[in-house]
Length: 100
Image 1 (cartoon, rainbow, N blue to C red):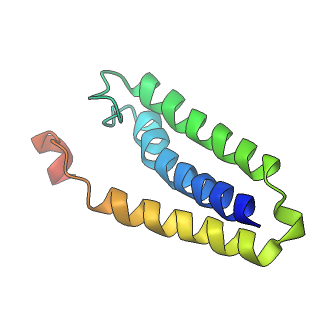
Image 2 (image 1 turned 180 degrees about the vertical axis):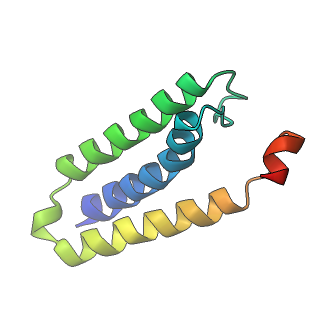
């Protein structure tokens, strides 16, 4: 059950972490990457997509069906923690992004 919790937390965290990268990239805007500022929207789309691919792989690797309640709680917790951490991120945005 420990593997379900750990992999579920990671899957939820990666899923919510990929959302802003993918959405901003699809809108044609770059989003800050974990390793520095992204120069292009394409890199943001690819990074968001990779986060989702890894999240789905973690979901399939973990024995989620054997512990469905723990899996749900872990993924939900990962999404919540990821969302809270991302909402508190401080990064420099252009004046145009702040007005939008």
